[in-house]
Image 1 (cartoon, rainbow, N blue to C red):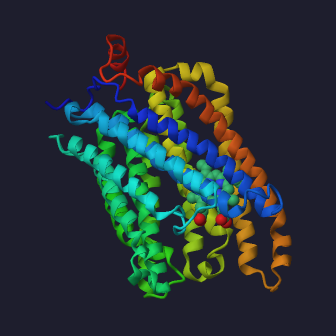
Image 2: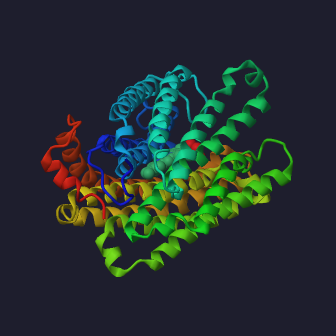
Image 3: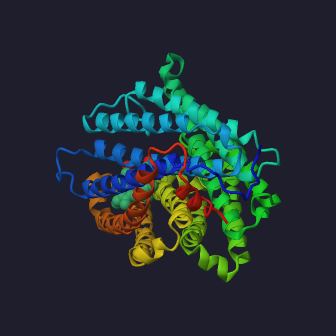
Length: 468
Ligand code: HEM
């Protein structure tokens, strides 16, 4: 029998918390490798045994893992609360977790030993992609067997999560087409397919993350209309279109019809704009009591909304084809990537982590960690602004530098890279404060319930307080 959408689940389904905990650890490590990489830009002789070509994949893979793990953790945690629990397989979800963990550690080990063999972003030996495919099938099966049991119309976040799952699978497969000689033997073909798949991959994780944002907005405002409005469905269809065709504006150096790129560019900007607008309207509609009651997740969603608009301005500037010629391959593009993955995705996912903690440990999160959370929040957001400004400045100078001497150019942008690295330290410390506060609570929840398939009466008492 299906449970009513507001009725909480009678199971711990805490496997979602394992994913979130692992995601937080991945973020903490990614930040460290990012900071080391930034100092490597400036002082190549620093930490000689850790070359930049190892630090970069370590940083990026862990950052991407943080996004996937925490988005998946949220779905594993939230979904069974609102559906027929008999179809949710804790066992499959646990296998998913352990296979992911072992594969992830193997990939990190391969990077540390300098064993590559893959392509950009998936630089690990391609054989390690197999367990990732497997876990994704497990996740998809678990997700859809629960989701299809829902008899009432799906709220938008169900569509978004489902679409993200299906398209990740397709685009991840596509990103391995280079293994087939037909693609590998023609450089242009390989680059076009490669970058196309990455553009769509980002689109698929955005579906998971934006779906999570809508879910949180619905719960905080206690208004089901948020995830059913026309504008929200507009966001979905634009996101879907962007996911399928938006890759075109990721491939400026590849020669193909200009209108395709321009169209893709307009679509992706409209998608960001709609997301910002939905969050804006939602914030305006909240009562003071709702904002106060959910102040931690609310704050992160508020920050993410601000970053949507800041990134929109940056994306508008860099995507104008004439300017893109100067900015492509410079730090401006890195600012765009990190601006969106940190400002938008990370803020939404932190909102999700703190929402879960708020539901499970209530005001305790406030009482025990109010100060570090506040300091962490402001330090991370303030540093991010300086961090991105320094990257954009360095990129613009690099893109427009006229002398042929690489040495001269590096000397000119060095002060900007120093500001970037120091702001990166601020960002790392800010996020670490947030991560430590979250982990200190989450650890207790994960380890106290780890071996339970059936909740005790005490847990049931606590779980019934889950959702309002
Ligand atoms: C939530 C935190 C972070 C996330 C999600 C994140 C994400 C990313 C991503 C996705 C890239 C790939 C960019 C591209 O290929 O265009 C990247 C590159 C990079 N990040 Fe981060 N990052 C984070 C924090 C940091 C911090 C604190 C630093 C320290 C200064 C940092 C330094 C770097 C460096 C040096 C690169 C390589 C840039 C290059 O190859 O030119 N990141 N990051």
